[in-house]
Image 1 (cartoon, helix red, strand yellow):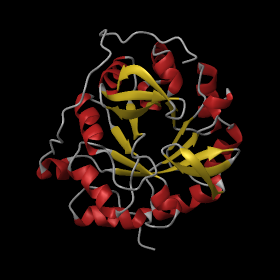
Image 2: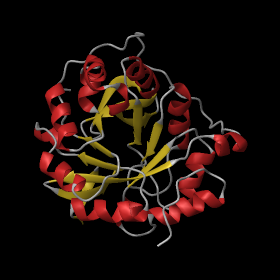
Image 3: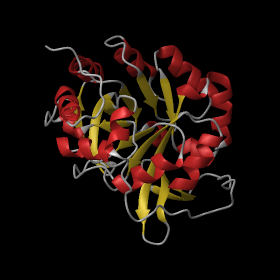
Length: 287
């Protein structure tokens, strides 16, 4: 698969999730920290794009303009993910990070093509709040320890892409979801946290862009497995999807793209719906 992989620390190649979702009690949901809504800006060739299951990309618009729009709607953070950087063998474009930072002070998660500590430091210097490491973290998990020691776990996110397989359950996918690895999603999530990751951005390759709802089984499994916040990603298409991912899993945040890009929903509408269900959120000021 073009990379030399380190073996999982526990020696396992399969670690399947349970077959059913075990929802947290509603009172526990109400008492926990405010849930975050994070619009995602996937970029390619300097533009925001979106596809279905990581393919069939379509142009959405200007990175900085969309960032400003979502900030005004009340987003809790933004994710800027350079989805072609790894495949093209380059680092994330710093000009895009600076452009977004010039339009908003929101926490900014940036990822794509990170392969060295210098890459991390340049992104933080350009305005990133946290860096998201995906494919390279799987190819060389010890890199996570290096980054955590240097900049702190609170700035380090694992971008964990997972795909369902009949024989092994959820496995880690890399390189834009194109390559399946020997790791189970559950085992690698544990290992990444042990190595210093402070948060996990968990994307279902199967659900991405389909708008039929988050993969609740995957999200519930990983969120219960690790002691760090999990951001659910992939599949949001209507208000009910945001409600159920928070009522039926322990996800601390929900990331979405198409549903916001296509103006099916606004961030404000999502947060108001969550608040009506008793799910804690930071509501934006009234317009």
